[in-house]
Image (cartoon, helix red, strand yellow):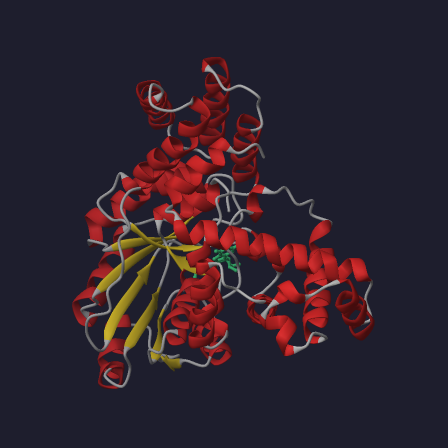
Length: 440
Ligand SMILES: Nc1nc2c(ncn2[C@@H]2O[C@H](COP(=O)(O)OP(=O)(O)O)[C@@H](O)[C@H]2O)c(=O)[nH]1
Ligand SMILES: [Mg+2]
């Protein structure tokens, strides 16, 4: 998520947890590293220092109850979540629900408009994209192309240069849609011209949400930018884009908390499905490498039938996942996208350091696993316990793989089952405590 910085934080955690003894010296070393990572993420110095102080104080206070090793990571988790603030959702409560996107040139408005349209249309809403960018040449074609690609409505007027007139012309078409997403003109900076234009658009459109799109690479400057937009236009929320491409994303997210508008979505890549609602708890869990079963499930739900997955999830969490379920899950994972993206969602797996070169091989492996499961009898899939040596031989022959591949699948299955069970029975902080007690 934070690229290099996430990796650095997880490395510090791994180091801490793998020590034979964790005392005050080890705690201090860990906190120094964490502070360095935060500052590298462009979190404001004062805020970073205060956070580290708070963590140290809490750890020292609670150390009487439990060994240091077990309390540090849960406290870090809590404090980072508090640093990022509460989750604030966009609630679609009327039709048509109008979302106006504003922001400077290149912040990612047009891309984000497409992402939001796809996000909501996947959730069953009838969505239209509206082009009100009258400044950038070819803005109309760009948005129209996006709308065709993701198969949502598109409204605009290529030749009209007054956004208010465009809205008046189109407004009778809005009611055909559940959600209207409006892309507006950017500028190099928030100047009077831009403020006037957006104010007029706001008057005419009467949007339910005015979301500021800002790029994560501006780091802690996000505070000033968000504040200026908030004061001038009364934005209702923020979308931070390009979190994938910069080390400064943490600073940008933290900075937004100190304005009155909250981050509602984050953009994590150039592709149109790379957007998610901003949920501090999940975000921090992933940052720390705790994995995230719920997010994984949600991603997967989008591509395969919801019902089947709910069934799998329920069984998995109860520890009753069989190989048929695992097969469904492997298929779903293959549909959802490249494995390296998914890795960070799978509980436990992101704490395991995977060398970059290993990823293509892992994808191959999943394919192999799928063949192996296909070569089993329904009975074997239902109840993997019955798979003995002679069955392994038969399955391997049928799937055209080695016997050790079959064994590897079975042990992967057992591990997944264990992890799922652990995830289902505990909330994140309990899980963390448990991890704290485990040598990694
Ligand atoms: N890596 C990455 N690139 C993004 C993201 N969002 C937008 N971009 C890229 O940023 C550039 C500007 O985006 P655009 O939507 O045209 O910005 P606009 O001028 O505000 O409309 C384009 O090259 C996009 O592909 C993101 O979340 N991650
Ligand atoms: Mg644009």
